[in-house]
Length: 223
Image 1 (spheres, rainbow, N blue to C red):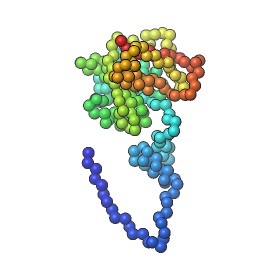
Image 2 (cartoon, helix red, strand yellow):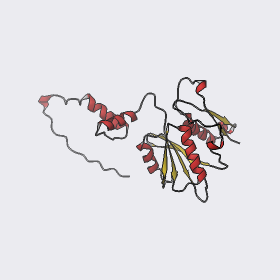
Image 3 (spheres, one colour):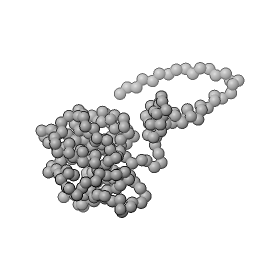
Image 4 (cartoon, rainbow, N blue to C red):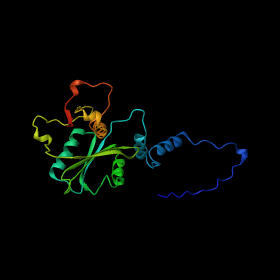
């Protein structure tokens, strides 16, 4: 990618007027926000509010996830995506339309979709002849893909197959994540998978957890 830079001579300044005046505080604040979110400048009050919400914070808000499917997705894949959306509700957005995406070949469009709605996580499901049902989980940092993992889906049973699980997640609730298997501590690949799954299912990061708010347990096993 080539970037062209235009150089323009600065207009002469009358030395009798003294040093140049500093820009107003509001303009300086907007410039700092625009720089933090990638150089974009807001043109409306609503746009300035959105950019302020995306400005880096000392304590970041809980990450939201974009959940979407490829141009082909079988029944099990669609049920899995809907269940992931239920587990992360209300910190997720489910896209029902198809997307011609290949995350491991070109992630540009996927990054654009996540950045459009300020998502830091994504789940992408698709089906093909070689991979009848696959799930790609990933996360972003500074608007770009940080890492992602492709998972094979087999013998899938959805939430509706368990009658006792009737409630959807509520804002502020935290699941208990249980990792079974020593491989999560010794295998480098599974260490990255564990980190990603903790980020995806962890939800908000409060200082204290109320045990009465523990609604469900997510168990991940490795042989």
